[in-house]
Image 1 (cartoon, rainbow, N blue to C red):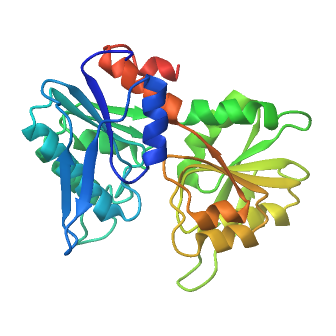
Image 2: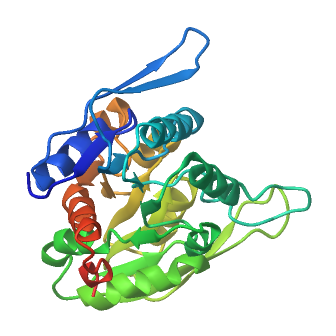
Length: 316
C-alpha cells in the first residue's frame, strides 16, 4: 500500500473508474456488497474491518440518480456504524446540481437537499468535479474539494488544437464564457460566444455568434451534455457561419433522452468527454465520443487529502 489506514470503496455507478483510481493509489478496492431487496430497497454490507480507517467512496450520482444517491447514503451509514475513522464521498458527477436555486415560485433547491442528506448520513468530506454551479460548495458544512477536469482536457487538446489559423473555443451560452475563456487562454485559441434568443414561446431560437469562426476549427465547451439540444444547435449555427470542423468537449456525458441520436445527426465531428459518468453501449457504438480518464486526477486528490497536502496546487 502507498499509505496506511486508507480504503477505497465503490458504489455500483462507475466501477471501472473506481478500479482505476484504486490502481493509481496502489490499493485494492474495499470489499462491499451492494444489493436490492425484491421491492427495490438498497442493502449494503461492508465485508471488511474499517474501524479507524479513512474511507473514500467513489460514487457519481448519475442515472438512475435516485438509486445511486440512496446507495451512497446507505453505504455511508454502514461505514459510520462500522466505526470508520472518516468518510469522504468522491462524487465525480454531482446529481441534482442544476437545481441550485429557485428559478420559479414554489420550486425546490434540491442541490441543497442532497447536501443535507449527505451530511446527515455521516459524510465528513466531499470531493466533486466541475460542479454545474460553484455555489453548491456553500451548501455543505463539511470540507468540500471542488476539482476541475481542465488539466485532463488540456493535456489532450494542446497537441490537437493548434496551428494557423488558431482554433476557436466557443461557449454555447453566456453562462459558460468564463470557463471557455480559461481554456482558450491556456491553449492559445480565440474565443467566440453564442448568444441565443427565443422571441416568444414555441418560436425557435435565433442564434447570434459573437466572434469569427469562418474557416476555423471550433471547439464547443460545456460542463454537461444532457439531451444535447444546446450543443447540437450551436454546432449547426457554427456550420452555417462557415466553421471548418466542429468539436465539442464536456466533463459530464449525461446523454439522456434523444442526446445520442441528436449528436450522430449533428455536424459535430467528435465529442470529448471524461469517464466521470460511464458511457452507454449506444454512445460507444456511435463512434462520436472520445473518453478521457479522470482517475489519475481523482486519485492524486485523494492522496493529497489523506496526507494533508495542497489540492488546489493541482490546478495552479
